[in-house]
Length: 240
Image 1 (cartoon, one colour):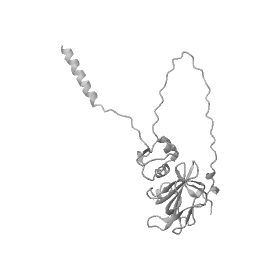
Image 2 (cartoon, rainbow, N blue to C red):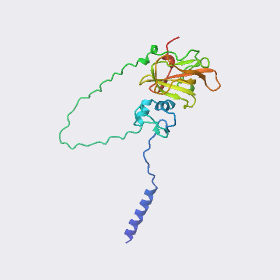
Image 3 (cartoon, helix red, strand yellow):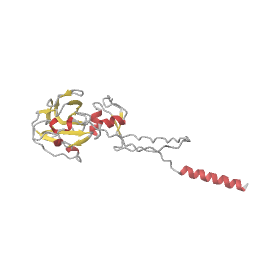
Image 4 (tube, rainbow, N blue to C red):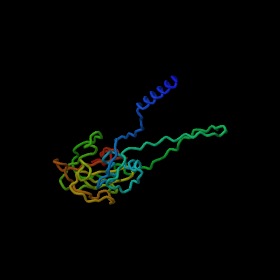
């Protein structure tokens, strides 16, 4: 009987200890650490631009096409979902495995992007450059060009307007043009916009009037992004 009670007490103690051990659940961390709730006027491109992401990856992470219409209230992941590891299947075949040669993957040759050549771009407006490019500073991920209030702003290359609005904080009236699957350009601080989303534009087309940023003098803030990453526009625009 004594042995029975000792075993019972031991079992109760083990159960009590087990209840004190915390349970850890797998968590999914992201580079931005959050998702985004779509607001009125947003496009996939403007959201990707806001967070410095490649629009193609943003679409892929959320299982949508790049030309999908997103709606206010919709929530988008701003990170790559974790892909579960495949389950290993053990074969019970009695056959002896045959050694195979290591086959190197075939190298994929990417087509040349015509917009990568500087002579395919034109200047978005006339004026003096006010600052140099710096990827580490949010307000210098492009260049500012001084000019006169209301002077024309031009599309720097052929493309399609993928955003035209004022919903991105710090950019004022903003236009984003998609030139290829690789390159986008943006025109900020506009006084007036002449193009709407979905419009095709040719290089040199007047798309806006120059405005000003807050209390500064008249200027255009111009950016180019390659696969979602800011690049120095002076490496693409023709020398002058």
